[in-house]
Length: 345
Ligand code: AMP
Ligand code: TRP
Image 1 (tube, rainbow, N blue to C red):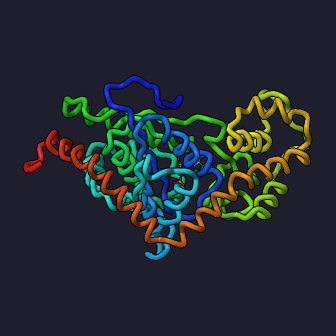
Image 2: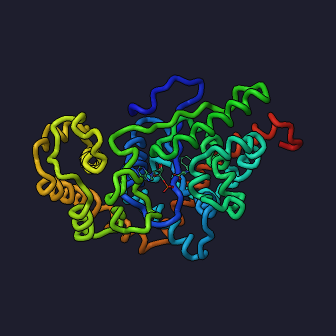
């Protein structure tokens, strides 16, 4: 078992996580999510990973062909990064109807006030909340359903998803309490490592995001070697050299971000990286970082392109994963209906 999967619980440990197919993958998605998903699949615990296409349409409705391509690309990104469909269950959310069905139940458990406090709702809805979709508001209840439909106990995510996981716990607690059962587990977020919050290369106070208007702010998983090197060369830094201990990164968000990225890509602790590079100037460190990034990312983007040339094979993998996902989540939904008092369940 990996470090993150140790909390004692009456439930069998099971890892669940998901990513939205809402556009290209960034280095933030890779280090904050996918790489850690892959690391957990050898932990001895069942791992279930989802392409959350129902979530992807909460903020924007895509051209149907675009959504299909993005869904397959994300599946290809998972597999190219080392996710093995024989070891993990990999599928897209809309193929398994238990997610939407359980989400409805959770819509009736969660309170308006809980949803209104979600920072992602406030950020994504912006000033014009009246014009946001109802799905965007209910997004965290669907996310809770994703996890709890499998009795997921551990959820690896980036820092930005912490609040949604607290809400997942609140939903489980209220359901268990209101029906006097101990049916849903109280899920543990797994937010660990050097890269739980990869920042923009242009502004160390902003998260690296696929929706940032500046392409120079992020590394895309599909960027070629020259583009990666150029973006890292131009990344914002301060005039100081690199410190030899973590304390020396305080109040230096850009420097800290580049060191965190290096550590996460190289499977090292930040302390170990600084022991090696402390005292160097950025002019020397940046080429080291771009060589490392190219070495780690190029094989993944190459493999993604190869997989994308055979979309039928990706669809076959997703469909097989959906069958396995249904086999776990359908009995859990049925039992939920029984607990609630739905006739025929
Ligand atoms: P999303 O693309 O918003 O569906 O995010 C998918 C996963 O990537 C989630 O677990 C996020 O927390 C994670 N993630 C996205 N951006 C970053 C980032 N800049 N740093 C770390 N993790 C991230
Ligand atoms: N909300 C997550 C994100 O934007 C994606 C997500 C949907 C998810 N369902 C999930 C993550 C279940 C973990 C578990 O990143």
